[in-house]
Amino acid sequence: MFEFRLPDLGEGIHEGELLQWHVVEGGAVKEDDPLCDMETDKAAVTIPSPRTGVVASLKGRPGDTITVGEVFVVINDAISSVSDDNGLGKKNIGDSQDSGGQAAPDFFPPREPAAENRVIAAPATRRLAREMGIDIKIVTGTGPGGRVTSEDLTAPGAGSRAASLTDAPSRASVDFGQNGEMIPKFAIPFLEISSLPQPDGPVERIPIQSLRKKTAVKTTSSSILVPHVAHMDDIDVTEIEELRKKYNQGHPDKGRLTLMAFVVKALVAGLREYPMFNASVDIDAGEIVHKKFYNIGFAADTPRGLVVPVIHDADRHSLSGIGWRIRHLAERARQGNIEVAELTQGTFTVTNVGSIGGTHVLPIINTPETAILGLGRVEKKPVVRDDEIVIRKILPVTLCFDHRVADGARAAAFVREIKQMLEDSLEFMGRI
Image 1: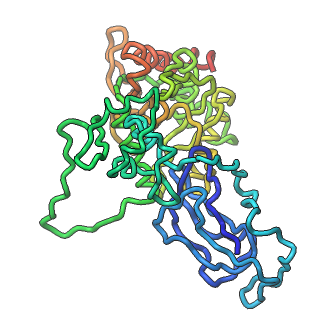
Image 2 (image 1 turned 180 degrees about the vertical axis):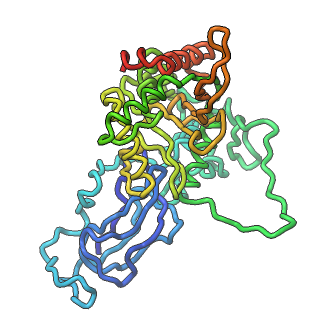
């Protein structure tokens, strides 16, 4: 019997939600045939079978969360051949390696050997353990695959497992209940979550799952843990819009450029001058990490929900190259076949509601990034130029940023940098 453990699904991904099975217990399967569809907080992927054989056991149902390293399929590969009755033909597998040591197929990167004391836990749980002065490595996890949960840390008797962490606040951050359980003291004062009252009329209940659940977790965490500040401005994009139209007319073979491509190029120039907005906060080290590369993500609406494709090394691509990548990534995101690598390692995000409608938008920072730019709808508006009222095309923008890395003056200067480039087509072409 071969026990197939969920392989690594990408950097920073520790679990996935089972969407659907492509096999059934007792059914035959060939190597590289699709086993199931799995969704992470980055993308949906199809996991292939690592062996030829008969499916002996399926360890989950659609909607279940499977942890990386957890056994979720058992395949009987001890038989010498598979019958044609299952439509697979005959295949000799007697020479296959012993099931105990074979790695996952090349579809996934090989996993590094797990450390002896490797602990599976969410970042929020690890942070809670530090605040409570508990060495998480000696806590017995009761979650799927041995995952340590916040309940494990606050359960009765958990205090006896506290370790002497020299850099942790230990008892200063916790109280103790009657049974010796640790109770965190950093709860939000006066916060009380009430149960939903019974509605008076008919309702439809829809489970929060898949990408919607991942979005809920990420946005809630960001809005609670990151001190958001918003800076708003209006940008006159009349000249850039004229430049964009001329470019599209002169290069019909390269595909149409959207305003987003111009915004991305302006952002790269601005981020070079103001690196605190192309950064992350390392809470453990107490440091701001300025990134010397520019991976610009953009929010894309798909049938599955909101995803953020990333234009890697945006500073190295031409204007037309940026435009092509925006179109290409957005289309693949809508089709649901975008790769995990194309949704990770972003350093700054842009979200555009202008095509749908609305003026200013207050987006939530896509942590661990430190800023996000929201674009509204471009509209013709009367403005004053040289004491004359003229009609110009105005783009409303909102920069939401992490107050831990910058103050309002820096944010205003950063937006001004972008504004100057997008309002002057000559300066824009001279700096890209």
